[in-house]
Length: 356
Image (tube, rainbow, N blue to C red; front, side, top):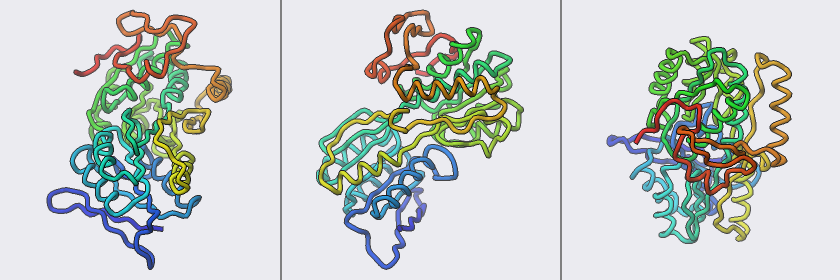
């Protein structure tokens, strides 16, 4: 197994060094680029769990660089991995897309996989998870558990992936509680615990009694625990940071996809395709449900998980109505993947505005 160290040099750029047990980097090395620290919960933690599964199930050597900004530093790190001969490079943040695509054109024998983007290349595939499926279920729980009818959401950037989660959450909440409203604060960062905490506290001061987030740290759950309100974690189970507050979490599971992809690359059968997996592929699950959730509601949520897995439930089944009252999807139809990936609006029940 590779021990990877990250060194921050004098100009603040991440430099990668390797300490190997009696061997140089194998020709079958697989590289991972992370946007935030691995920590013990969150987005990068879940991707790193997938990396460890790759090592265990394929025997390849893996390496990673964490806390890589979405800019020139990302291109440099990805290019360094390609230059040293990595067979597969997983670039695990939306803002890495253009840099991964650019580098992929210079290294046609390397397989590049970009997470959460929308651009394919001759040797660059895409992977994403249907986060909105879990968000819909947590919205239903929020709609039932709230007493103030005011819900809160700490969000990173206004891209379709994030807006899908916000809209699925309020759609789920209003399906059981038409009086529920959702307030959103944007922090313009995937990982900034200080800003995330400040946003959560601000929402709670506005009467929010259930809060969630689309950011990488555990700060929102911790703030909810301290302030005595409920919360949903995101990316991974964050219950240890808020044993009372944490009702459940939408968790992401990348390992099976990573293992399958690496095996295909090594076998020479991989082709660059776009994969968008949810409950049926095991890429989305809810964390254990808090005992604070009434048993009948817990049973209902478990049955809805089965329906999502069977594709008999669609979170964006019509009618889907935007914030201004326009019908986006009529009753009897489901929102298409194409429509989901162009989402740039709020649904009814969100009382905030989308930043320009």
